[in-house]
Amino acid sequence: MVLALAVVLVLVAGGCVCVVWAARGGPRWVRAVSSVTLGMGEVVRSQSKRGRRNSGGGTLGDDG
Image (cartoon, rainbow, N blue to C red; front, side, top):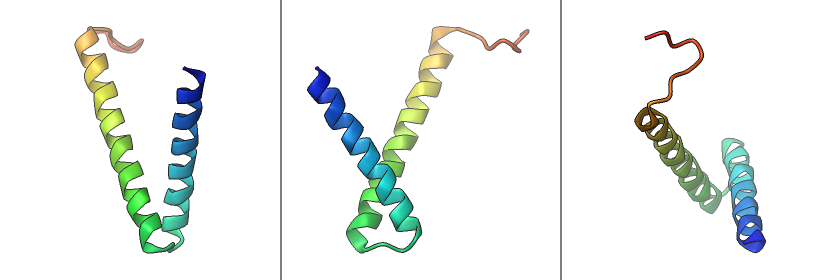
């Protein structure tokens, strides 16, 4: 389990490095990895929003 988490952490860190490198004009493969990383970030973000919406939990400032 720890090994799997370490692999995920390395992949995320590598993706972040590619996003920064692509913003500075890196090679084509870096831009491809950057696009995949940003796309996966959007997927995770939308899943997180959907999970919060389905759980029925409100925020502290949400009086209804």
